[in-house]
Length: 191
Image (cartoon, rainbow, N blue to C red; front, side, top):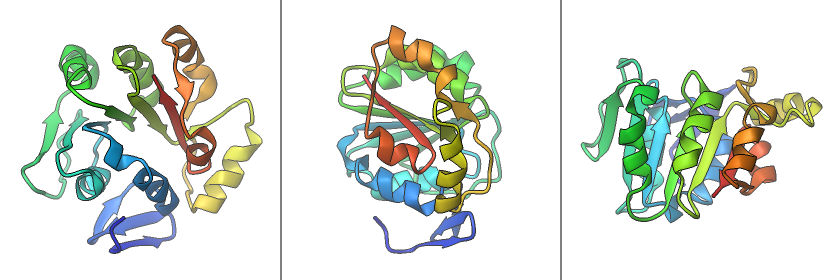
């Protein structure tokens, strides 16, 4: 992982760019990021996590990032595809990216994380991974506060297990490094 990352309270920065993830989440993501050929992020906001993905991915991996709004994001290398579209209106397009050769990581971090998960998980190939940010397992609700406190994260959860459980069962998803990621407020599942 890049050495130029700092955390100031609940905010993490890389090269001075705000990343909306706790630093411990980046450390966990770093343990798996190089195994993916395609990284699709839904909800890029200012593009900080997208930039982190770019700097830490394997050299040949492609990054596609969707958001409904074109925020005043920092401009990066041209090898990142920022797409300003409603992801739900772009389901076929995103499905094609997911179905491309190699392993895909789909990171749901837009305004409707559970709906993003439930919409796109059906398109995953074997060994693809789907994640949700601001996640907690509501079968163990007391742990979110403990995990968010230890991660330095001050924001409430925006996604929970019970809202995606039906899709997990229907599409035969399994937990992937679940405990490690749950502790940094990310739900993580593999096809």
